[in-house]
Length: 433
Image 1 (spheres, rainbow, N blue to C red):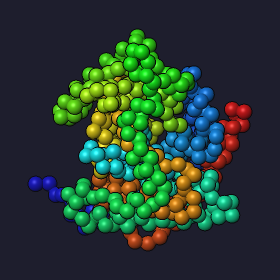
Image 2: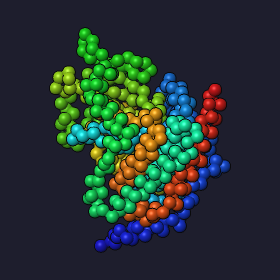
Image 3: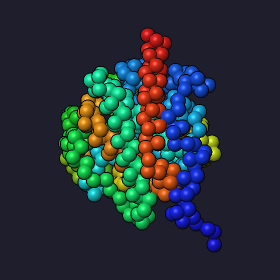
Image 4: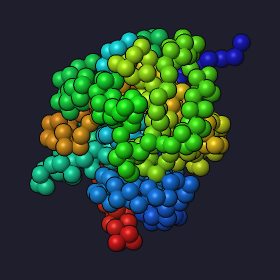
């Protein structure tokens, strides 16, 4: 029988990884390391997108350094790949930032708050998620806090984020495996930005979405026309989208296939979403179940490969990019959307999920002062749980230890890389001006 390392042996393996990358070495970033033009990487990521919407993506990226950061995952992926990494691998979100967590309805109807955007998910070095989320905390502080308090607010937020991550990883490393799988993060209601998101999610019922996205006509309810953000498809354009529902259905568990079969499709639209996803193909299908007050909206969202994939050649990528996202999401989340699945349209891979079923997002304006600090702490817990669910908490605990070296290094990296993001944003403004 092959030897399976004990928890103590795995913890020791984590400690040994400190020789590969000293914890204080995570502070390092220097643009002189770059072998690429960051703006060229952004331009390259536009290839294959809907040409008429590329300008809108640039517009959203130009709005602020944080807007640039959201749309420039390929730049940070290339930059992180230049640095030594721990080799401690688990499922990573890939686009971990302060606005990619939110509230949504669990299969049992309860409202949850968790990481909720997995377009870039892949198995990769755990610290890449931490560096990206920490940088987003610094950028959020710079956008929302009084100028005089920015350095302290951002540094405190990152230290709280890493301390929370480290503390929960240590806790999970000592728990029975099945308890790690069942672990839930509590006290969410006491954190004001999260409480606001949960309140929005409570209001975001399917009927609310029905009123927001559709209008009543003589022939029944149809999607509104709000170009370029929302536009109905013609019957000919809608045909391949509706045809993709059949293979999507097969990606669901049998009981969920049964529930989906009780809905009929009424209309199809194209919708612009997010910042990083702008100009990718994103379709909405409006279904009706037991009458007009029983709507179901499915989002069919194009998924290109993860921006991290070119730098992780030793780790095989999923053959279907929608499946990669769905399975990465299931690996990291405590509970996932009942209708999460994947499909293909015209040779392109798509993720399928419910749209706006009790979903609520964080607003950057909510992340001020103590709200930023409290939110950072909760981000650390949620990311720790996601990494422990899909990786090895003992290995992580061994590497992180109990001191402040890692937190201090990540805080330094986050400040330096936020500076780099602002420079890249200015360069984009210069070239697009």
